Picture: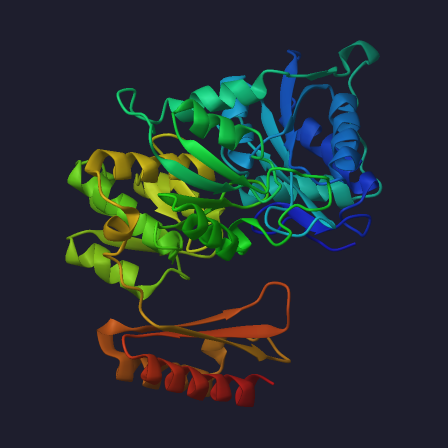
Length: 450
């Protein structure tokens, strides 16, 4: 067994291959229940999942472990990750659990936790839980027989989440007359998202709302925005919205069929909040992967872009630390801290629809202000993942490229967390220059790290 179970977004892997096995999930339930059990009161846990067939396996195993540890378990069925964060807070639960592998194919699954305030667990807590799970001799502090937990289904949880979403949309506005293409990726939001938009008055053209346990993210959703783009053009819709399997990320398509990534959406929302005086501390939080154009965009408006490592949990941690209320990732995770505690694709969609309705302009005009810098990304196979600062030729290569780019471009070197690969990324205003410099730097990395 490895020393760590959790990655940047919980435990994840292929079903029935370690660590995504029923026995690990049972021990994980035991460990989490033991850690969060405090005193002799009844403790509550909310468990939600996406539409993967294997969700039944891990739901049952986690429930057994948590109940054995003395936690009462509330099962809400297929619901988006942000819905579990909300319900954990709303139901005053001690813990929230999501069974999902997000944008991965059906043969994968994952488990992630939220604390009582709806935030993902810090590394320190995950490490304590991991120690219990991986220690075969761990002595479990089982409660007395009369203190073991119960399990129950919460039937009205989708309705609770819809009300929560609609409360983030101005009461005096509707979506009457707006045609929306909605791709739910055959995932967790296949029921809730269409209902929420229809209740606000939109005409919803649905894609990916017929899950069968095996088709989640299959050639649909945020990984395949061209599907929504084609339907927007075909139906002359006002906007296209593409969610991923657990609906915590969003990719948007304007009325011309142009795909907008997370950076372009963040720019639109940041400018709107700045105009309304609602952008706290004039700060937007994004990751190192966000396009340089977003940084320039914020600076030109007298604002700051704060960068974090890749992973929406690190974005949220920085937002809480800096007192920011808007953040996200290029991949489509968008966090509106005034409304929620984690990325929420449908919440983000409602903010965009609000802006379109309030300003009565097509999305192509509203989102066309951010012109992304050309970006070249090259994956270089490496034999050694030594720290870059310990390889002087690589540092010299980076310095040379940065000097040529000046303050209108940037370089990013990053090792993959799952492959023997170094990702070499160069951004700038001249596409030919960017391509040439990325190639040169990739050659340097390959020469000295192979």
